[in-house]
Amino acid sequence: MPRTTEEEDREGGPKRRSLATEAARNLATTTKTPPQMQGISPRWLLRVLPWVPIEGGTYRVNRRLLVERQEGRIAVVNVGAAARVVPGELSALPLFRGFDDAIVLETLASRFVQTEHGPDEAIVRAGEPADGLIVVAHGKVRKLGKGKYGADAVLGILVDGDHLGGEALRGPTAPWAFSATAATRTTVLRLSRAAFEDVLAASSGLRRHVEAMAVARRRPANRWGEAAIEIASGHSGEPSLPETFVDYELSPREHELSVAQTTLRIHTRVADLYNLPMNQVAEQLRLVIEALRERQEHDLVNHREFGLLHQAAYGQRFPTGSGPPTPGDLDELVTRRRKAQVLVAHPLAIAAFGRQCNRLGLYPTPVEWSGQRVHGWRGIPILPCDKIPITETRTTSILVMRLGEENQGVVGLRPATLPDEHQPGLSVRFMGVDDQAMISYLVSAYYSAALLVPDALGVLEDVEIGR
Image (tube, rainbow, N blue to C red; front, side, top):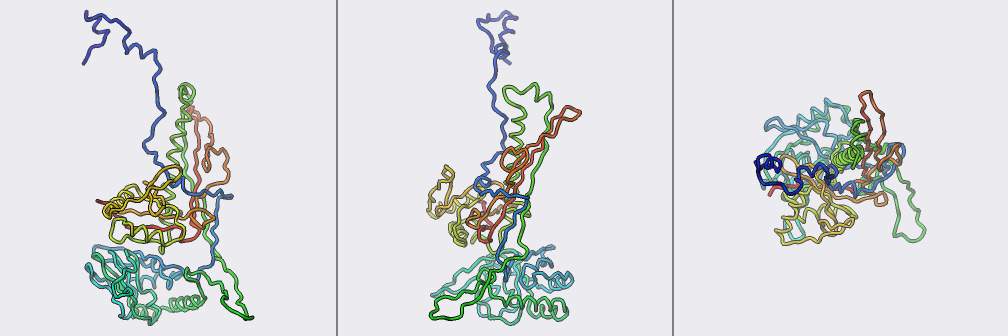
């Protein structure tokens, strides 16, 4: 260890000719930084969402009446190699929507038969009778049809929970209009029409429900399932014009503001004596607010009630064609909606997309967004968000959004005003000093997100990010 100047003087070493730095530091003021925090991310999602100030803490999304609701996914569980449909999840089919007899649903779930299919093995063939419901328990299935010149055309990709042939349970239907082939090792569950009719014959409640659903389906609907508005066009003369009205949903969805809160505590001695050159209370508060905003963005993506990943309609969820995100996958995602304005992806998903572009010799042009150059595709910015989860199998999701109330898009929600408001949607309330001389501040952030119409948000699922 090197000796100090004082030690050298005491031991008869070289004589000091100037003040030692060790002593000089006692009279100097060091240059300090504010407290740093590694957990601060760009939070692009909070910046890109249009924020709607709401009164009363609730935001109601009114929509036209849906006569034919979109089909959802049917959850499947497994015990070892045996897969089984979750009985309550059969309500994802329009035929069973609103039917809540647990015993009958359990009986239906028990009548599914499990089959295994290897890659490229046919699950159904075009022209064969459609004789029941098929649920994909695990794997990936390609729907194939014939193109104009006889070549196979991929009509879609089915993944876990997707299904085919729901209409076949209602009675005799046309043969399969397409073929379905396993793209990977695939497990499917089949409920034949004969098995369904056995359960139907034994349950009067199910028969009444099926008959009521058949009556409800007679009401005309547009291609989105909304009650039709009767309009005449192309006529001449003086024909009788149709009479119509626009019907609304009787129970529209209401979004209540969520909250993230914490209590910041600071000892009065710290606040009184150590406030120069930096205000201790202000610095503590700044870092707490950063953490709250990080939690806010996480909830806007992942919350079970209002998170974007959970609000996306099943009809707006698409799997990748081959695993990694390709330009074709993003084209499929973007073209399924009008006016796609922004893509949001995990940084690793953006890197995976870049590798696929490199393989094809494509070099997407960067896009200007909020004064910065970011990755883009077809002129749409691809913004990073590290709150989008990555599964254990190294897959993630990519979101595409249309934004704003004027576009019937995705909006963020926050209070119009707050007592002791420190930032929009965030308040800092002084709670007093306790008998241990602790100053307390209640820090609260209120927020939510709403999807005005289903096609405003799409999700590309099962995006592989491994090299």
